[in-house]
Image (cartoon, rainbow over all chains, first blue to last red; front, side, top):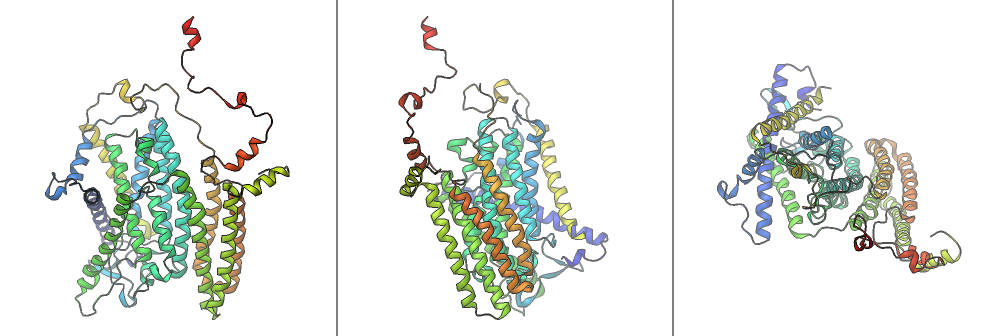
Length: 405
Length: 155
């Protein structure tokens, strides 16, 4: 809970809230602008090209120039489209993208058990726009709402490629949402709270969830997040060789710009969510003798953006390095590997935590759960083999016996 | 509910930004629609078929299977918050629950509900044994839909 909004809400509180909202809005817009430039420039470097270099120093203003250009383009509405939904879809895509960032703590002193409270204009507050109790659930909820934007955009276009793209997108996002949710559950088990502030505070003193959850939920989360963002190698939603432009084929002018903006904003915010959940957000070593503004703002902001930058780089790196998945490979990876893995790991972590609380021998507890998980894995493997027809002998035996295979 | 005030403010600001962008764009852009521009995109071909209303049933299956897992996750989240207080009882309960869900998951996989790959080999082995399956029942002329019948043209 944000101490600023716990008591009575007067004019000053509202002004501080508005200040935070406007600053984070502007920071997101500038961040997205730089992210688009960074991605184009880095992919260009990796492919031995120059990349944007005309607008502004090092081509930094290229995104702005492209955005302004799109304002002047004709906004076509296909004759077979559903007018209301066609206009609604960009909002459904853009607004959730902005909202996710509101719960990300970007600064504040979290070292030595501090809870990140800073004093802003004489009021105690947190360096995040909002800190509702639902915390991380809000992030998951918003990423679910974003599916509607993609789905409705494709459906309302009244054209075949967008429809195919949006159907693929919803199936993909829904599948990987399950893996995403299960890996978040492991983090919540250790944190014991849903608020993002609490999750960061719990990782204080190098107790980062990256290794406290023994790495596996982190790997599952990063893969699932890449799929959730529809970024390469999971960009089947807009696979241009098959689907023209995917769900936004029929969108032009500013409507297309808003989809584009939302997509890159989601990349930035999802990286921020990874940093918050697994790398301790703005947490890091802070010398106790430093002046207050260094402790509360300068160092935490540096740590946060440094960690954020790593993931932004990794997402671009994925794009430049990995070829696109085939659709059945994508579904197999999500359903038959990531979801069971996240589920099994959650159960092992649960037994470890309960064993610690109850004073049982942790080795025995984990061994018992691991045995159960291994049995599950063996059963899963045999089911997959049976379904994919690798066990031809079994199937022909079934057919010979008159059974349904 | 005061905690949600900033989120409401952000919704308003983001929606306002999108709306103002539309207004600005509609004032600045040219408006010269013509029938070719507003027809559905079809790589330069004049589009004749209706937009597709059907897509593979597997996508619906995925949505339904997802609900099972979503329910599982929904039960996991409250459990993570009280795992410490529930102790051994909670561990056993969540284990039984996970086994129940996992068992239905195995059933789905075994029945091929999550098979996306090329046509299953097993299905071919079964079809091969059907006596009514001859070349006249399996070969179908494709690509002739919508074309003028060649015999009519000749006549």
